[in-house]
Length: 412
Image 1: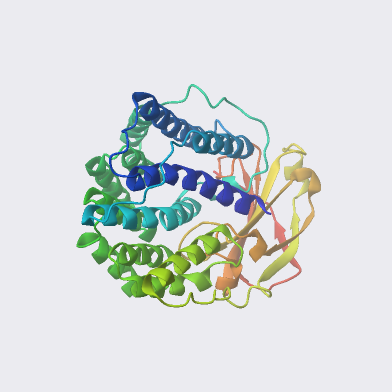
Image 2: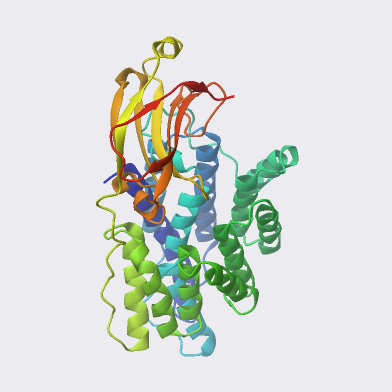
């Protein structure tokens, strides 16, 4: 399992664990005892620990391996602390039935939406970094309020930082501060009308309205799908909205359109397959057979050699990190495929294909031409920094072989 898949799988495990808390609250039998202050404190602690981890990873104080290990530990402890939901089923009154539907949507759909959003909006290349050393501890990080304040301070100095606005929106969303979350998402969208940010914002509006997608959430979904009927995030949310409204056949249609975009066996594909089974059961129809992943993946490969002039090599350390990756010529800068080596391995013969993709929705097989880059990062950071050295080959045909990519330009 490659590092990207491991990261997404671990993230899904933790997300399902957190969702389990909401399921217990939604589906516990009527009249069950309310949570004790100790239970509430435990839930708050787990949420704050997760937020601290996210803040530490975002700031670079926590490397990938430590981040994943700590998230696993929280998931295990959280599952162990889940209260007993009892054996009685939910009541038959309309409010309880709505709670059941909301619970199913939460369990089946939102975990995958979070994974897709992270892969697109997070620090994509950081996922592919092998672990180095742990620069700081997990404990002692800021709580959610402090994290929000830290982001606000950062944005006051740099209000053009779209990703920080998104993180601020997510932080407020985690605290159920919907109005503040919407303000942050509005600022992010003003800077970059990104479909996935718009979808996250629509989900916040639906949550603010008690899980109802009528009105603006559906308008956002339909607007995105009108422009791009294959938009994965919009199809995912459309399916969840239709499911929550009891329109199970429509949910099947949306999720069935999404499924071919996902790699068979991936965590995202398994989540959608589970959603399809649930919708089919509710609709009283047979579960549709999983669609195969998009064709063309087998031949989607770029290979060649990365070289480094001796004059530049003398300025670098043998252990300095080298990232080799392909990007779409237009649209998101997220790598379509990426691998990592070191200066001492140069010249390095590379091969990029869909097995090195960051996301099943952003792969080499979906492009005809790409931009190929190789970058030396003395700091080891996945994001470009001044002082890095980079080489670029524009307009490379997917399927090209025997390329020569020379690292010869300093990042200013």
